[in-house]
Length: 142
Image (cartoon, rainbow, N blue to C red):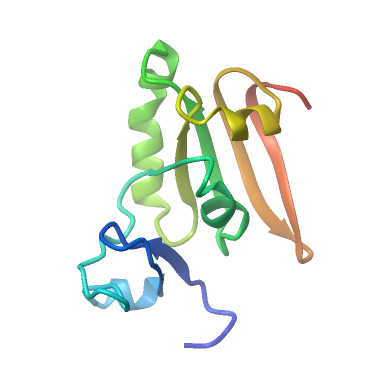
């Protein structure tokens, strides 16, 4: 695998280790397993739920563009857009990561991003070797 190939980082649900997955191998039917504990890894087939603690690793260090959904379980509009985000996550797997951050349980990242209302969607990507966040939809300080 070359260094410039798209590689996804998946966190093992059993031990928390970060594992590199190449989308081309997944397309060939490769069954991923954790390199540290051997647990089976699920290739991303839907949105990934993150926390304040995992935001840096899962969003800012992602090699792929990231669509961040800032939401809460009680938010009706958040629940209304959830099926569309799940569909986007499946259709764009290997090209775009869709991640969800519950702002009630993780207020630190929401405050850092200046979120004033939900749902708020933010796209993160690398442009000319610099990390960029932009294309905010919702209520965030801009």
